Structure formats: C-alpha cells, structure tokens
Length: 373
Ligand code: SF4
Image (cartoon, rainbow, N blue to C red; front, top):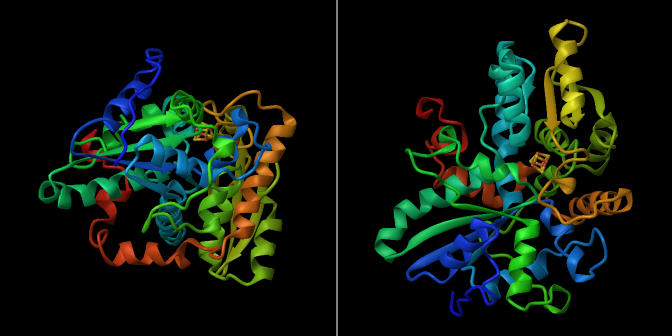
C-alpha cells in the first residue's frame, strides 16, 4: 500500500494478531491481502452507529485500504469454491453409497467437536477446506508463482466472525506443501478496533468496491453466513437452475429458518436426498446420537456451531440480542437477493480459476491433506 499505517495508539498489546497485522502492514516489500467473510459485513457497522444488519462491506473495504491493505477480496468467493467441491463430493458419495451422510466442514468448531466427541463419524466430514482455507491456499499458490519475481512476500489476513477460525489456520492438515496458507485471522471485533485505532469513522467513509478478480461472488457464497446457507448453496449447484421459481422452491424446502434441527428432502436426479441442517452443537449431539441408534437417516448434514450461524459468531460485536440477529440474518439474505449471480457455478471467476491456476491442483489446494497430519 502507498500509505502504510502503524498502530497509532500503541494500544494493541492485548491481542497478538492485531499487533502482527499492524506489523505486516508497515513491513517493507510485503503484499498484505485481506479476505472478508460473509457474516462480517452485516456486523462491522455496529460500533459506528450504522443500522443493525446493514451491508457495510463497501465502507469496510475503503477503511482497510486506508489502513494499508494492498488487496481486498471476498471470502464469499472462497465459499463459491467450497460449493463446487462439496457438491462434487456429495454427488460422488451418493453414487458410491459410501461415507454418508456427508458432513459439512466449513465450521471449525463443529469439525473439532465431531473429531473429539464422535470420532466414529470422522470419515463423514467433508474433505473440503473451509472457504477461508480454500481462498488462502489459492492466494498463496499464486504468491509462490509470482512473489519471487515481484520481490515481495504475500501475507494473507482473514477477517472472520469467528474465534475458532484462528485455530483452523494452524491445523497441519490445512497446510499446503507444509506451509500455513492464511497467516492471521482478525475477528470483526479486532478489525473494528484497528479501524478505531486508525481514527477512521466507518459511518463517514465513502464505500469502495473490492479488488478484482476475487471480489466477485455469488449469492450462494453470501448465504454461508447463516444457518442453512451452505445446504441451500449446494442445492442450487446440484439443481443447477437459476430460474426464480426453482430458487424459491429450494428456499422453501425447509433449509431456512432458525430451528435447532431442520430436515428436508430433495429430489436429485432419481433419488430422494435427505438433508439435516443443525444449528448449535447441542443439537448436533442429538442428531449424531440418533444416527448412532439408527433412528434417523440422512445423506447430507450441515452443522454450524453458533446458533443461527456465523452472524452470531464469537468474534462478532456484542450485544447480539434477538433483534440484532434478525437484522443480520435479513441483511445476509438481502445480499443474496441483490446478487446478479445466484449460483456458484455461474460465477465467471470461479470458472476462470478452475481452468487456470487450480487446474490439476484442486485436491492440493481445496481439500485437506491428510498425509500432512
Ligand atoms: Fe465460527 Fe460460529 Fe461460524 Fe462456526 S458457526 S464458523 S464457530 S462463527
């Protein structure tokens, strides 16, 4: 960036990530790349008096540029990649009839919970990295190709609604070629503090657009921020229609809403596919116990550890009362509603990366590398 900022107040000793990111931003020959998770944009305005649930993405982008980030991209784009890979995985498992149900893997608190408390279901967890993981791996792959020539070092910073994402980036099975992809995770609360420390009032900033090419994402990527969103996004990909009535039919399957356990059944090709959307870990225990007892059967299970999903994550500004949650949830669906592209496979940049940088490297960059554990 042109105008690098350093922590103006020195009041950063509380959190090592904030400190490290300030240091990275003032470093020489560094290219600091930010990615912003779906749920951050409907919460980061809270401490600046912006209306609850309003999409503040453009203002956040402008503030991050002023702070010194060089490139700012959308984790929703990473979510589009997750939809592509997870849909493929579901199709394969349905065809082979193995390792069903497929469990989602984008919520690290859920993944750790399942691994520790229900190890017998470990194989059911999707091999997909999370959206931040996929995106981080992509950026670092590009950096491996270009950083040497450009005489720079790329640092990836994820801005997340979630404290568990800090541990996720340190999992060795998330590394690519033995190296960590995402360098730092800042929570929404931490990034709020950095913006305040830089003396920026988000409410007064003129919104700016994200950088290209990874600033374009579909509405399917956006809804990852709420419970049921991943499932809905995968269904859109598999049903592969962007007709209004089909999209509406998917939204009415029962995947939306804030119940602890939602069940739905969808016809894919000639098969009835049974889905469960689970909201919170207590409900996850219930579902897994019932599965163990043979009382229920599912083909696909989405679990988000936080009730209502990432909009109410542990890294989001508090208080998060019922009205705030509702406003954030509506904010996320509004982003989807306003997106010209509804399906991940219709995002032109997704197609470009599959034909380009990802070609032949889908497994290396987008899935867990079990061998590296
Ligand atoms: Fe993190 Fe909660 Fe979202 Fe899981 S549901 S990824 S713990 S914010």
